[in-house]
Length: 154
Image (tube, rainbow, N blue to C red; front, side, top):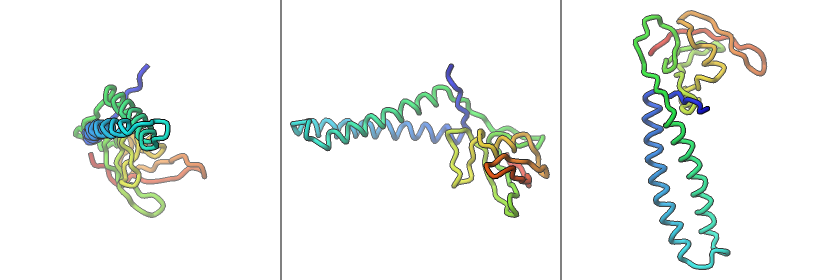
């Protein structure tokens, strides 16, 4: 059974762009590998062995990305008349006396440094379906953390 991958439209577009870049990189790496192979004795050709390893890593990345895109489900932002947090929502939260804005995205799109958190994270799971003004409890290793939903933007 293949797991469906959830993407926001922006995340899907970036994944397609990454695929194109990796395919281009594979072309270059393959050409470089052919040049290294032409140098002769492969048993002592460290460049050849390095490039071969890089190509295997790249092929694995390509396979994983192709699989994700093949089973992608794109969550289109929709008019949110209820004001509930959904995948793709930008949520202003108050946590520990500080407010911050986070965006709930598909698992492969998460980038906490940019405020994009995975829909599978404990915080996102606690926020999904909540509205502005609601308090949520988020499980954490040191115990539950409480935060408040300040605003929801879709």
